[in-house]
Length: 124
Image 1: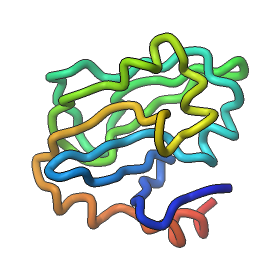
Image 2 (image 1 turned 90 degrees about the vertical axis):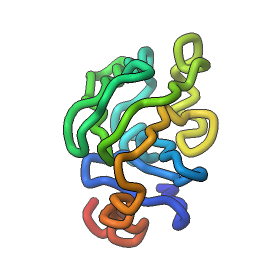
Image 3 (image 1 turned 30 degrees about the vertical axis):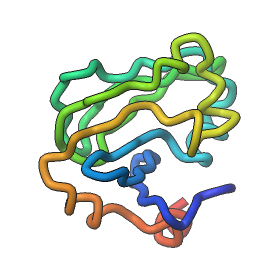
Image 4 (image 1 turned 60 degrees about the horizontal axis):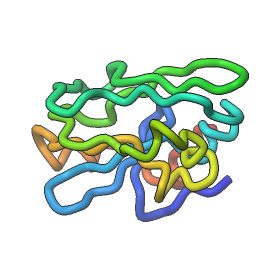
């Protein structure tokens, strides 16, 4: 599995990358591999408030559906428009083209409480 060390991870298999004062999030390579080919991504809506650890969306594959949890609390400021037509970006490039949404976090320091790639992989 591919879990870049510059990212942080939630136990619920979401990854985060800090970009300025925003947090970009998606699902990990491990999660997309376990789900199989994705057919639909339901991201939270722009302007929606999300709470760390709570459901923020859903990904559906040919096998199953799985909740997406917010890794930090804040307000959704952008969703990946490409996933509506091409949800397979999450399978093909989960850490780049497959990002799902961006959050303006209440506290950027909350990212520090997430797992390193080493700790995330140890928990798999």
